[in-house]
Length: 562
Image (tube, rainbow, N blue to C red; front, side):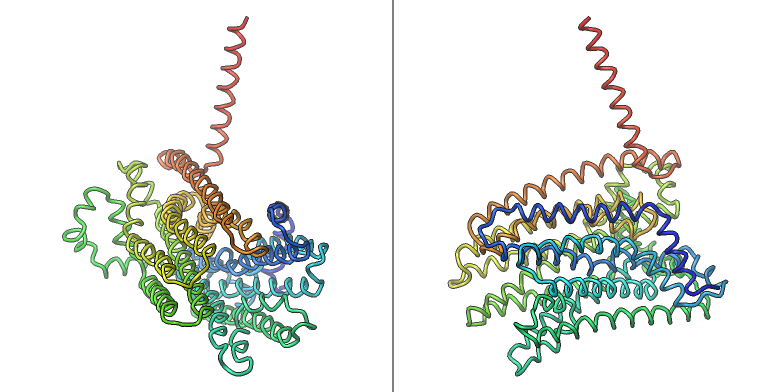
């Protein structure tokens, strides 16, 4: 047997596959388009300053993708094999744990690596303007590669350790978010003597990204701390891969068993479905049977409650600190920390909603239960309404609590001295837009999660497609607002840019909801017929029918003219 046979096979498959070319092309064209939009933003600044800002924004966008790569690509790499029962077939050969782990890492991270490497040449364009040096560019690329490997390795470890994709995704997000939070913890230690805060921050990927911009002649100590931080990222990724290989090797010795079906049945028995049916939700069972089924069998996990209330407590603590602190700078930083925690809480609720929307419907689709419900009298509209009602009922109180927290910074703005008038106007507009888009985004994620849960083959692909389809347009549209904010500072004109961004996001969400509604209508027709959920075929048929009708109408108009 050759050295690392699974890796060898995956590299051959990727080399012969035609998917890598479009991935590199689309990533490069997306980077060029984003750079062009940012460069065309009307600002009055020196070319060197503008180049540095563009370098930070482009690098930050790729850095954010590298942090999420584990959730998007490797968090379900081994879990899918365990659920399908095919992982044990690999151990009938002479393969070891490291063969399987490295093979899964290569096969599932190929697109992420190609996408990041395709954008790297675009990051070098700001060097032409003179605002970025060659060593800064090299340090940023090294940081991006280390962060990408670390995130992919952590996601792969959680895929081995967790039973389902939801646990693996949340575990990967928790590890990455916890390490990113160390940057803030190190900042809180700024009162300590020496560079004690940097000793804490060196374990954070955010610190490595921040220190990559430091020049040795400006701050030699920061340059040395950057090297330590990148080394910790490489070490953490290697440790995660070794741990995953060891766990897979132990599974080979003990026999790999997929506990998914048995655990779900045990959980259903423990919750007493008959008791719920008789006493608690009898009215819901009569009105919307599928909503009753989703709420009883798939409740919110205990980890969601723990993380949610922890973030709420941290947000309230930051709000209390902004009220009690006397120094103007410290109060402003506490208010900034509160807004950052609000953003984290927003993303946590939206990720959970997308996971809930894709998981249940995907499991029912794969098990065949959805087809039985469709052909037994539960049509498309009752199933869609039941699925949406069940998830909205589960997430009603988290969304309501988050909306209440959303306006705490607005109350803080009523106190004198903080912040200036222009900053206050921009912050109030941003908080109001965030509160409105929280409701729209959650609803769009539920609809898109239903559509992609039916269409995609696995939960990770369904979550990735639904989440990026809803959230990515808003993130891209927000970047042009960041360029003038970093170059000239906040102003009253920034509120106008924010209003334009709100309109663009509302239009994008409307398009998503319309496309999802059409796809669900066509897809459920396929389910009734016992066919595969393929919206591409239906789109092709619709295009052909519209073209044929257009030809008929044009011929009729021509005949009437003659």
